[in-house]
Length: 70
Image (cartoon, rainbow, N blue to C red; front, top):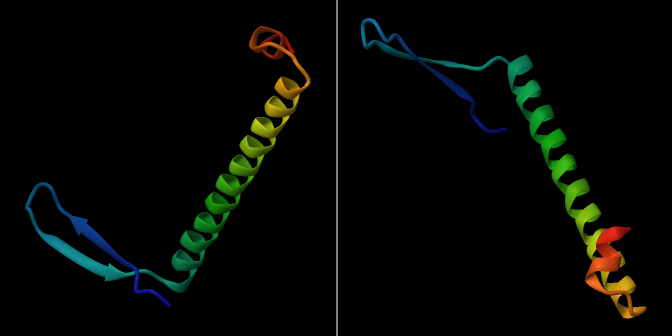
């Protein structure tokens, strides 16, 4: 497991303190990272399907204007 540390800066005094995150906080961070990764993967797959569909339409002889109208 990675070490997660929070850096706290008091802007009035300039004092800098650090603390280790709790197990619950770490789980929340890791869950958020997994969700973000899943969203990125979905977006990439969707874009690949879109490009494939556009290429197939172009191969059928449709012009860029006709494809854009769909």
